[in-house]
Length: 247
Image 1 (cartoon, rainbow, N blue to C red):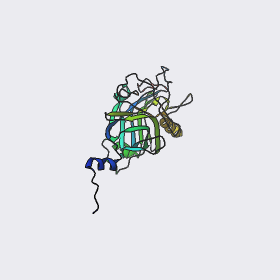
Image 2: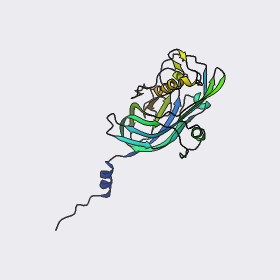
Image 3: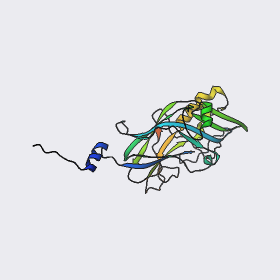
Image 4: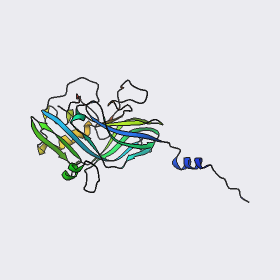
């Protein structure tokens, strides 16, 4: 008579899941420079009061793409108001769980919202058919920059997910959004739309920010060390901004 090999339930579950332990992960956002330089941002006459960006399909990846961890399918909306734009802190966007491990990239899509997307507080984005809305003034005149930009972003960094709770911050640096070299881009001019979209994408960065201070740090690391953040489409945090929303 053949003998049946009976494995403990825990061992079976570990085998099915690949042995990966799920860990808590939060995603936050902020607007401002990630550079430690003190160079003042160029004056553009632009003062921002609100930034809204719609994202979906967020996941962590290894450098070669062989290891992936879904954060959320979304869509989610990053909504940074006037108070957020004048603060050095971060705004919590979502909480999730992902398999423990070390990842080299965070990937997501900037994607316009549709009427079928049920996202709280996203009515303006839906009505505009937009993925990004930026409100502010240009030389004292109010404007709203709207775009239906759809683009995949991969931002590089070192994301170590372990048994403790981690946070990743997505950073927007608006200091270069309305500049082309030294030329100021009027956000209300249709001819400047493509250049502004490219500047927004290039300004994005992401880093592990476990104490949610707006700077790269891991648990037990409070030295505010620099980060390795960029994107595979030629973008990454650059320039300098005092976080005031004035550029």
